[in-house]
Length: 112
Picture 1 (cartoon, one colour):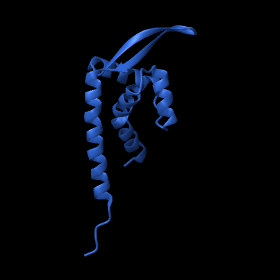
Picture 2 (cartoon, one colour):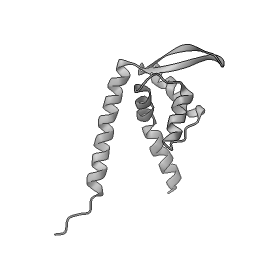
Picture 3 (spheres, helix red, strand yellow):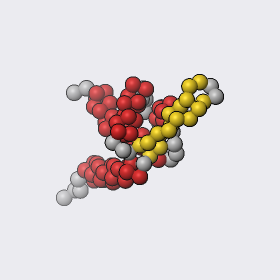
Picture 4 (cartoon, helix red, strand yellow):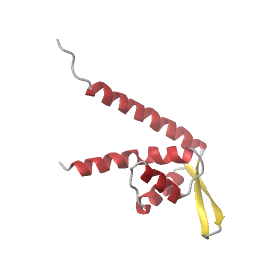
């Protein structure tokens, strides 16, 4: 098996959770989201981020608005919707269950 492929699949699997968590903190411009992910050592390119944001928007989990920019064209800012907050809460519960399962199965077996 290729460990790099498996690690990439794991990162992709949590990208919605992390992206919604970032946007939950406050309205966000895609480049800012990408930078925050890079700061967390999760390298994501625009070709991944923009389709993800559009999927989340189309699902009603995000909304957006345009804001004029002093240094170029208007910018699209995303914010989480009430439905997105509920969805994020469910993702967090699932993450916690997975994390607990990993922790409980990773402990050494007790000596008999």
